Image (cartoon, rainbow, N blue to C red; front, side, top):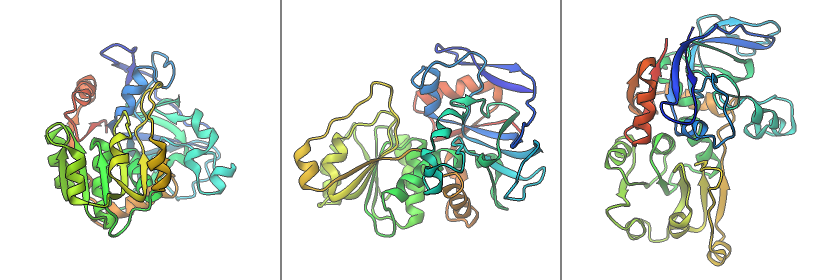
Length: 348
């Protein structure tokens, strides 16, 4: 099969090679890949921020496709058949630990060592991949499988963060950084009834896309003071601030969050990334700061798929660029230049 394999931490990061098509082992499903997303977490991976990566590793953790085959001992609780459209979660919980049992499967310790395309398991930048069946979630009728891959990371990460932060009808929301996750958060928050939704970025292109996806206000923080603009719109501050930049910094968030408000952080940062908080306003204003990792695959992903199938979220609006496999290094170059809303690579 054709696959994009890791070369090393210097550009170009990947090379297209012919590699053996994997066979599903016990409890695994073979997926024929339709598309994969181009995510900023991959840049962290290529640069070694998550630890050393062996040459030949296949990245790509935002995956959609079709069921191709089943390994032995597959329980198949969804009743999947060959040819059914699916998405593949990059979080692969064991389903039995105390975190899974309490509805926190995104923090399952077993998942930390087996993340397709990130850690331990080859990913979806290929024509096929095998994954444990718990990571395979069916798509509903009417959801375009080619454009569904961002559900498996950008939408999933944004959705879980918004839900954890308590976003709902009438929640005032500021989203700082409108890349793939931030733009997904804008679109999902609009579907959830949040108002107002203020998007902050330094790229006019991203802000235009944010407005298209449901932002009520946009602020280019390189051209105007975001604190004064946000305070003009929300004198008491925002109920929720979503820090979605790849390198989070809570200075702006602490200035614009309301009393008893919530700051939720999804940007991973590098291994040396830190942030500091002035303790006095943090305590006397009762601000809640929370990190949010990914999503719960068996709970959050089906909910997002239903939102898409109902027409409340149009996933095609998020995708700004579509690449062929041979253009994958160009795709990552353009990602680093900030040219994408969300880009996908079509494999199927």
